[in-house]
Image (cartoon, rainbow, N blue to C red; front, top):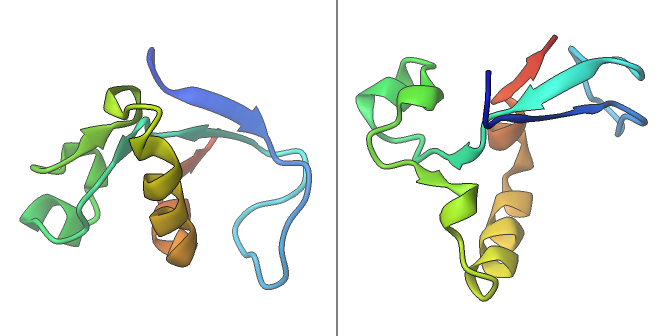
Length: 82
Protein backbone atom coordinates (compact mmCIF):
# COMPACT_ATOMS: atom_id res chain seq x y z
CA UNK A 1 0.00 0.00 0.00
CA UNK A 2 1.03 3.56 -0.49
CA UNK A 3 -1.60 6.13 -1.35
CA UNK A 4 -4.47 4.44 0.47
CA UNK A 5 -5.54 5.90 3.77
CA UNK A 6 -6.52 4.03 6.89
CA UNK A 7 -8.46 4.49 10.10
CA UNK A 8 -9.62 2.67 13.18
CA UNK A 9 -13.33 1.86 13.48
CA UNK A 10 -14.75 3.85 16.39
CA UNK A 11 -18.44 3.01 16.10
CA UNK A 12 -20.78 0.88 14.02
CA UNK A 13 -24.21 1.66 12.68
CA UNK A 14 -27.19 -0.61 13.16
CA UNK A 15 -26.95 -3.78 11.08
CA UNK A 16 -23.27 -3.34 10.22
CA UNK A 17 -21.65 -6.74 9.73
CA UNK A 18 -18.09 -7.82 9.14
CA UNK A 19 -16.48 -5.02 11.14
CA UNK A 20 -15.86 -4.46 14.83
CA UNK A 21 -14.98 -1.43 16.92
CA UNK A 22 -11.20 -1.26 16.99
CA UNK A 23 -10.69 -2.82 13.55
CA UNK A 24 -8.09 -1.09 11.39
CA UNK A 25 -9.38 -0.50 7.87
CA UNK A 26 -7.87 0.82 4.67
CA UNK A 27 -9.94 2.56 2.04
CA UNK A 28 -9.32 2.52 -1.68
CA UNK A 29 -8.64 6.11 -2.70
CA UNK A 30 -10.90 5.94 -5.72
CA UNK A 31 -14.53 5.89 -6.71
CA UNK A 32 -15.47 2.88 -8.80
CA UNK A 33 -18.28 2.74 -11.36
CA UNK A 34 -19.69 -0.63 -10.14
CA UNK A 35 -20.80 -1.29 -13.72
CA UNK A 36 -17.69 -2.43 -15.65
CA UNK A 37 -16.63 -6.09 -15.81
CA UNK A 38 -13.96 -5.60 -13.13
CA UNK A 39 -16.43 -4.04 -10.69
CA UNK A 40 -19.08 -6.66 -11.37
CA UNK A 41 -16.54 -9.40 -10.60
CA UNK A 42 -15.62 -7.79 -7.26
CA UNK A 43 -12.35 -6.17 -8.40
CA UNK A 44 -13.35 -2.55 -7.89
CA UNK A 45 -9.70 -1.55 -7.51
CA UNK A 46 -9.28 -2.32 -11.23
CA UNK A 47 -12.33 -0.32 -12.35
CA UNK A 48 -12.06 0.93 -15.91
CA UNK A 49 -13.79 4.23 -15.06
CA UNK A 50 -12.46 4.96 -11.57
CA UNK A 51 -11.91 8.47 -10.29
CA UNK A 52 -9.26 9.06 -7.65
CA UNK A 53 -10.35 11.15 -4.68
CA UNK A 54 -7.31 13.39 -5.14
CA UNK A 55 -8.65 14.35 -8.58
CA UNK A 56 -11.81 15.92 -7.16
CA UNK A 57 -11.93 19.68 -6.97
CA UNK A 58 -13.19 21.43 -3.84
CA UNK A 59 -16.37 22.21 -5.76
CA UNK A 60 -16.92 18.58 -6.85
CA UNK A 61 -16.12 16.82 -3.59
CA UNK A 62 -19.29 17.70 -1.59
CA UNK A 63 -21.57 16.54 -4.40
CA UNK A 64 -19.60 13.34 -4.95
CA UNK A 65 -19.66 12.45 -1.24
CA UNK A 66 -23.38 13.26 -1.07
CA UNK A 67 -24.00 10.79 -3.91
CA UNK A 68 -21.84 8.19 -2.17
CA UNK A 69 -23.85 8.57 1.04
CA UNK A 70 -27.05 7.64 -0.84
CA UNK A 71 -25.66 4.16 -1.48
CA UNK A 72 -22.98 3.83 1.18
CA UNK A 73 -23.26 0.04 1.40
CA UNK A 74 -21.78 -0.22 -2.08
CA UNK A 75 -18.74 1.82 -1.06
CA UNK A 76 -18.28 0.09 2.28
CA UNK A 77 -17.62 -3.12 0.37
CA UNK A 78 -14.37 -1.46 -0.73
CA UNK A 79 -13.07 -1.40 2.84
CA UNK A 80 -10.18 -3.70 3.52
CA UNK A 81 -10.00 -4.96 7.11
CA UNK A 82 -6.36 -5.21 8.16
